[in-house]
Length: 82
Length: 220
Image 1 (cartoon, helix red, strand yellow):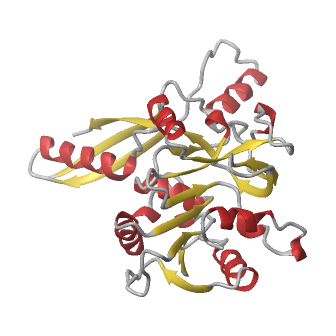
Image 2 (cartoon, one colour):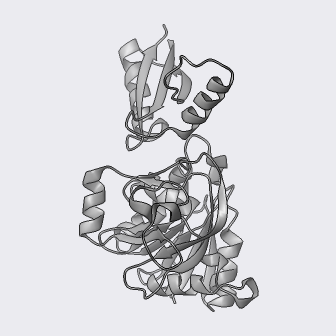
Image 3 (cartoon, helix red, strand yellow):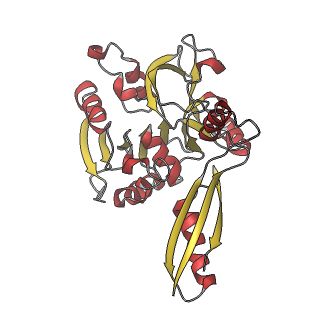
């Protein structure tokens, strides 16, 4: 069966995210001043052919570890859609 | 000593590196396509160079996809048996993604692509060298444990300084932690740096400081 998997990759919390900072500056300029922090990451969707949801999740996790996220600078979360 | 320069799709400093090594430093250079994997013409006395550019369009993360090119598997094996490897700019990013060097290169702290001459200093040199940089993702980062190890083993080969060689935060063009511009591995066989020494090896460009960098790496 084909599983739809969504992966969120975000910069580590302690790291400066210059992109997020620049966007927050833009939001402030728009007058939206109650936003206290903006951080920007990546959203990746995968379609995985696997025998079970657990197997699909394991494949996604392996893909994250090997390529999709770099643990030195990022963390990731995997969400199974079906 | 021979030099192999790996060309990835999106490399754009490969010919600059070839020109500097071949014509300015008089070295034998072999260009290597990333899809090939033969390094049998090189011994561990030779150097493989990963040039600057935007390999694979910098998709996902700089250097992340180039790391899986067939030639990179050979380069990693070559490095692991003691062969010498230099990565400049995007090449440095590829080395970090490959795990041949620790840490990573983050987007510049000022969110801008920076293209200018900077000064870098190595403790063994009497003065700072003027070398150009051109990158958007040059903010070196590693955790404290790795940084302390790099310092203890003298693996930080270049730091950004002012023109007099003083460590100064305002001389840091990208927010790199501890002003780090270049590092090497513990064995001192794999080198990575963001500045471009190959752009400073001829009087025609008005700057010969890059020759000093290549000398420091034992390449000249």
